[in-house]
Length: 149
Ligand SMILES: CC(C)(COP(=O)(O)OP(=O)(O)OC[C@H]1O[C@@H](n2cnc3c(N)ncnc32)[C@H](O)[C@@H]1OP(=O)(O)O)[C@@H](O)C(=O)NCCC(=O)NCCS
Image (cartoon, rainbow, N blue to C red; front, side):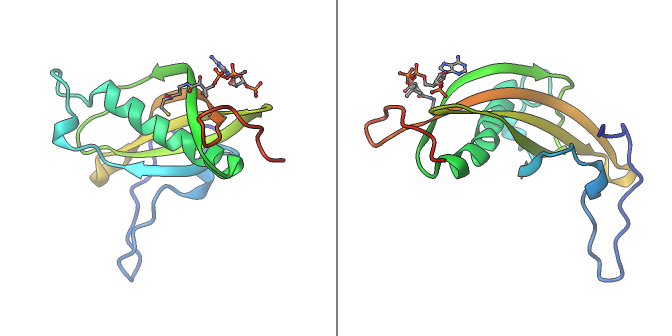
């Protein structure tokens, strides 16, 4: 399922609860693993959010499902692909969705998609980043260990 470029503004309920992105707009078979808003300290010289900050958040978000599957320590072994599709702006609320794409002997690969919610008065949702990363289950000595089955 593809996210539409724009969504109708979220309407607060009688209790004041404002719904987030409605479930039918989320990427298929992906799980929300992180939601975060960048701070002014994360801005680069252009006034957009620094790409290195986004990469760090994607690494953290990508580790959530592999950690659960590996049931212990993991390490990032590779960023296999990383695409900055759109700049991230101050005030954007970023949502990170992940799905496992491969479970190997000691490694777990994930695909992460990042969506920015911007302009709350007229909510607009934009896919800003997507990436593929691989994590390795490691033992107490930092050596690869088999992923538990
Ligand atoms: C992660 C680490 C323990 C792996 O050790 P290693 O001796 O290189 O392990 P291997 O070559 O046996 O590879 C382990 C797994 O990673 C996979 N892998 C290695 N390089 C890869 C790459 N570029 N892309 C995708 N998978 C890769 C291998 O295919 C293997 O998977 P499998 O067992 O499921 O088939 C070691 O490389 C390491 O400590 N790296 C530094 C990790 C780190 O500091 N990360 C940043 C902070 S978390």
